[in-house]
Each structure stands twice: as structure tokens, then as C-alpha cells.
Length: 105
Image (tube, rainbow, N blue to C red):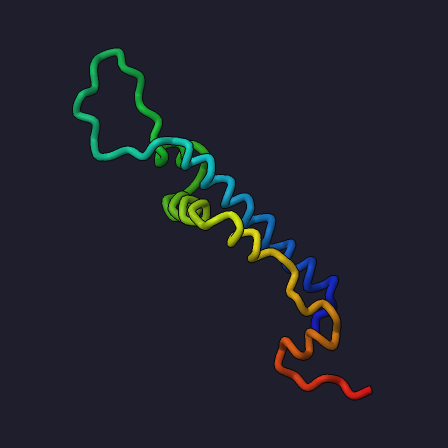
């Protein structure tokens, strides 16, 4: 059975990358989505920065870009709830949460 500090450190190892992915998605969302090819490019116009080009420049794959945007679309309170410690923090309560019989005293 995991001890509480082991459970917490395990949760932390999942939280840090998830927050990084969320932040990538937040930054990509700041770039307006491109809709189709731009047919009106004039000579001398600067190339438009798209979400795809920004993600590629940052070294993200297509899968990572799409995942980051999906994670960024999760409501903030729901995202934060995923990393809150469980309500059962004591050994006895963890046993109840795991559907195990309570230890006899």
C-alpha cells in the first residue's frame, strides 16, 4: 500500500508535465486559428504565424499540439480538481476508499 507522501510525490510527477502541456495550449490559443489557405498573399507581406507553425517552431509534434489545445480547453476548475489530494488522507480512510475492510483495533 502506498504511503501518503509516496502518493503525493507520484501525483506531483503527473502534475508538472500536465501543467506544462496546459500552458503550451494556452499559448497556442492566443494565436487565432487559420481557416484554409490564404489566397490573397501580396508581394512583401510577412508570412502569417499559425498555431501549427508556432508549435513546429517550438519542437512540438502534431499530436502534442492537438493534445495541448485539448488540455487547454478543459475548464480551469476541473483541471485543478484533478490534482487535489483525495478526501481520504488517513490510512483508515484510504482503506475505505479502496473498498477494503477497516483495520481492527
